[in-house]
Length: 202
Image 1: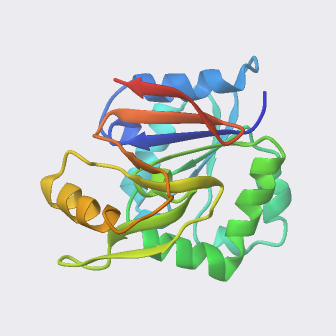
Image 2 (image 1 turned 180 degrees about the vertical axis):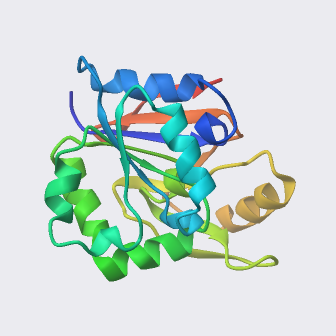
């Protein structure tokens, strides 16, 4: 099956019932029966309403979620390696990555990816897999920071948002020899073995 990452820009279970992109994600596995899928709501600071939407959307699968506190559990690597899919939610990308680095959950995810666990995420959960992120520092400023580096380049989700688009375009003019991806909401990218194999527009 190879290594798979699904980058989702807007849409999905957070805004839709029975979203096509979530059905697409389940089909990547090609396994029969309920899949073991865990939601990582770090970027939303473990927002309960977001977690509830995840459980409702994937109620036919074997679902779980990992809170910020859970990321520090002793058997976290074993738990994540046993999953079929990790689904990372949206929110504050930079804060999420700082928490992951502090708890070494970034290493856990990288190891799980190499072991064949499918990685997926929306917005912050789409941007984080790339080498470089460019996103909000606060309400008025954007800044560059390191992503997990599983995929080359940088991704801008919600490119249809005018403020974000202008900020990303201005930043991107200074980038050299780096692959840049831009996705409007409901546009998605599927990578297999670090190569883009499908662009899904829903």
